[in-house]
Length: 215
Image (cartoon, rainbow, N blue to C red):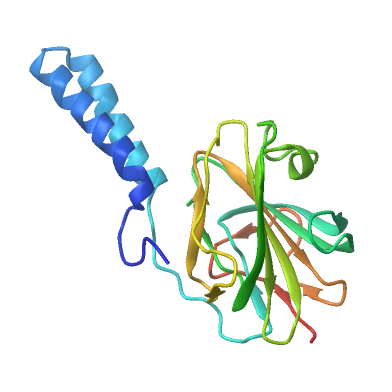
């Protein structure tokens, strides 16, 4: 997986470079207010693309959060992409202040990936799960349990990054991608899974437990 052991993800480096060059150029040109503005922008971009280390919970049956943010939905919902039946769903909203590196929720094999073009409405809207630009990934554990993980673009987020390919075996806590500038992650569990979070909870990607699988 990419971006292991670096403080800022590589996807943020072009933005950092542009902001820094603009700040230096305006400083040399004597445009101090603009130089200070682009320096502040440089610092914000570095903050946004930060890439902290996380310690994933041990246990093949334990599912951790794929993202930092706030839980905005917990309940039953139909998964329309792969499973095509009603399961349990947890949705996590990532504001611009949250870490946007996404992490693998459980040791699994990537069985399928589908990317859909769509709208860019606010990611906390209920309809965003089905209407926004999104990347859907079907995971299957060693025991055959299927989990669907969906990266959803938001009002400002226009770029979804997903590293693994179909057939890859990925490990819990690994970085698997990110969504730029505010977004959402949906994760679908089997009905028999025990959900360990509730609406309104704040979670950390790669650390906070979301669910316990029963099989």
